[in-house]
Image 1 (spheres, rainbow, N blue to C red):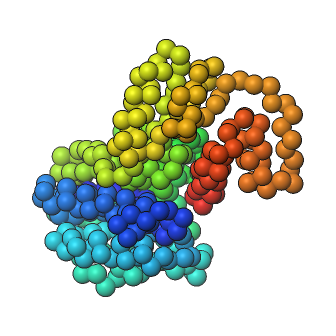
Image 2: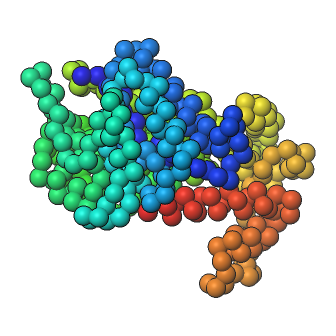
Image 3: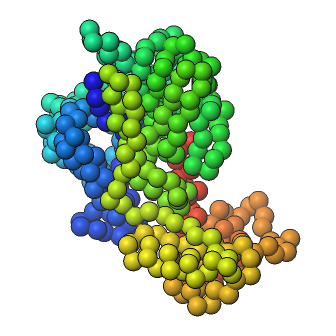
Length: 342
């Protein structure tokens, strides 16, 4: 069996975004990437796409535009078969009261929604266990076995976009000897973890959603269970985030690169960690000043709101007043994004 694997689409209303072709910008970009994945599968005669959870973003809220984009995608690619499973962001409620927003897909003839641990096997040796996100998923994974495991959870050895690892209820030691290949959703950073005859793949999110995902090469995977090969294919069709480090030595090259990326439509900021003259580009680009300073008198207190703390930080770092709102919104987007993923 040959199939494409992707996860963490996080379709949302993105109500603060500017409108591109009738849609909020980030939703439009995700739509383009989805279509690119579908077209790649058509071109390469791959008939099945498995989506490993978090197709939608807002848990108890469904944005009509986001749901419409999702349904239109499956209906546009009726010649392809889809297998989808719940991620934590697709669910509302807990325990026996949980409700999946993906129930809206139940009547789509080319979509198979997996709502409980399910084994897919045949006489050719195909052996896949699919476990959607739930309160008891860890027990099901630890008690079962298969050649391939497809699920949605954070592994002890996995890392967030920041590079930080979170202690989880499951680690490699719980999977070794039970599974050979593990395809996961949940962590947005594309990564592969190989140890003790087991290979774990996070396909990652399909677009860079904010500055917290800058520099990451987003992708989807092509899995061939006959040859046990897994290929990474970069996604395309969205604006990327670039943070360029500037020094006195590389200033000319960095400015040239920044202008090229900006011309291509990407988000660009320039960071300096040493005293480089930036007066000639300060109005052209977002510039982050990380030159070491004595900022012991920050004027921060525990009673301040997050917005006030961030604004005070911008003041202490002498960010120009006309740029502070931009920086502030970017920082709040990152803080809110991290909070929503917990």
